[in-house]
Structure formats: structure tokens, C-alpha cells
Image: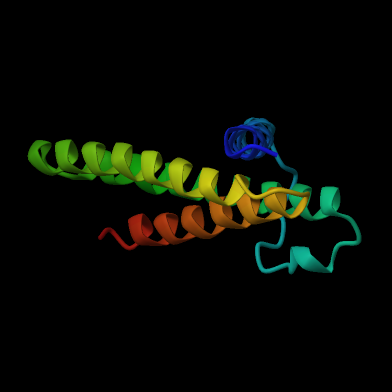
Length: 131
């Protein structure tokens, strides 16, 4: 397999993961899922990826709520800096997780999902703390 084809496959895995997260984020949940659940206990790769997407959607909502709250509370100069930092952070997250998605095999989907979950949850906590 050529290096170009491997990267394209990884990017498509990341794209699928992000579409799943977006779809899950858009639909209302009856109750928040347990974000502490160990997704690796699932039986199949598809189940693991789905579990990671559900958890990521919860953290994505928390991140967006914290971001909006800060944007409402901060003075204009700091809002501009937060907006710029958030834009750059999103670019970093997507590029970094695309790297993990570029591996060959089905594990790439899991790696990409774990990457998005790990970075999104950390950023949500950071913004919730107002840092």
C-alpha cells in the first residue's frame, strides 16, 4: 500500500468518526451516558467506535457550553483571544487525530476515536475551569 493511500484511508476514518460525533451531538439524549465507561470492553471494533463517539458527543456538548459561557463573560480582548485559541485548537485536534486515523487496519478507527475523545474532554475541562 502506498503512503498516500494509507493517509487517505486514515483521513476517511477520522471523517467518519467526526460525522458520527456530529450526528450524535445533534440528537437529544434522554440521559447523559456514562463517560467513565471503558469502551474497550465492547466486543467489536464497531461497538468500540460507537461507544467512543457517544462519549465524545457528551464532552463536545460540555466543551461548547463552557466556550459559550466564557464568550459571554469575558471582556472583548479576551474573547478575541479565546476565539483564536479555540480555532487553532480545533485545527490541532483534527490534524493530530488524523495522524492516528492514518494507521492501517481497523485499529485506526479506535485510535482516532480515542484521540478525539481524549483531546475534547481535556479541552472541555480546561474551559469549564475558565483557564
